[in-house]
Image 1 (spheres, rainbow, N blue to C red):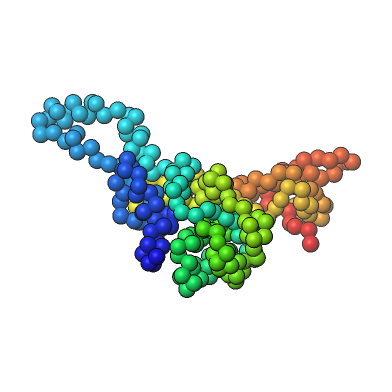
Image 2 (spheres, rainbow, N blue to C red; image 1 turned 45 degrees about the vertical axis):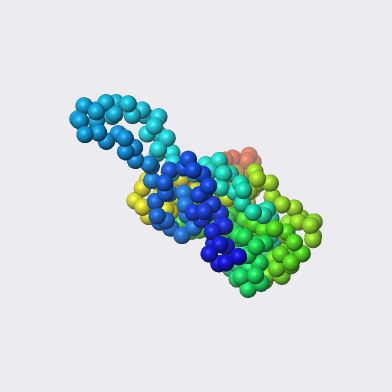
Length: 277
């Protein structure tokens, strides 16, 4: 298989969805590996020379048709399900060293070409997500691995392909029974890849100047429910408390502290507590 053919089998390539003859025509690619940004098909029959025909056609255009056109840019689980159906191979989960997920993807893709395994190993993915990280009162949008310590690979399982993946630097093994890994179900693959497609669609829409329909990034923080912190605000400076709720978006915590012999919930900001050393 040539390098061009290998690229054509990627999940997020144009060829992955080319078989759907009913889909609207796509715009040229805006961002690499993204095919989710589509332009609604223009209804050429609505353009008539007589003015009265223009008005008549305009009246016959239903709001349902408009909504259907606008929904083409939206990514759903069904969108991903249609794309993965019919692709060669099965999906497997790899254990990797924590923090080496992207390096494993890079090294394995290199080995696929050097070992001539393009007919057996088709695709490697490290699902990512964008989140707002809150540290020391500062909010920052960051991209992080959704499943630390894991990557997923689409492949035909043979002795040679198994060995090519297993011997990749940073891979500690397949999820499953040793030499007989367990393939993911369609439901599991859709769950893992839907957020990936949503993020790529949002990036493509943004680059094209279109509204972004994907949900806002989640907020993450170092504070966790059940964690013990020290209060830094008067009149409780130095007192310990246990976190019962975390509101990362608003940078606030509800902590339980002992006052007059009773456990009392108190609402505080992140700046009013610190982690115990």
